Length: 91
Image 1 (tube, rainbow, N blue to C red):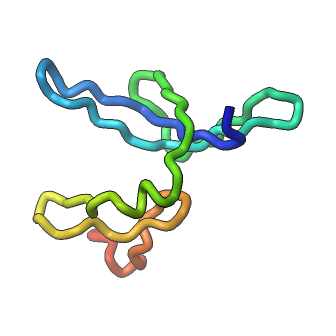
Image 2 (image 1 turned 180 degrees about the horizontal axis):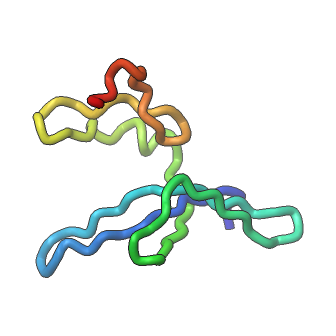
């Protein structure tokens, strides 16, 4: 088992549609074999899915995500957070 895993919440979109996987945290394996889970958000249904993280090379080769406007999504740092500045917040 990996020392660090990704934590997701999964939103079912209905019959015939793909589910939406949203990464909401990280799970670490402790020295004694127990786990620590750090969440950045809470799942609406209380269900968490823990999976091994993808290798960095796999993530870099994927096409950029698109937003509703058709523009590429902002770059994200290693923790998955947006690298946009505070001036880009729309409120």
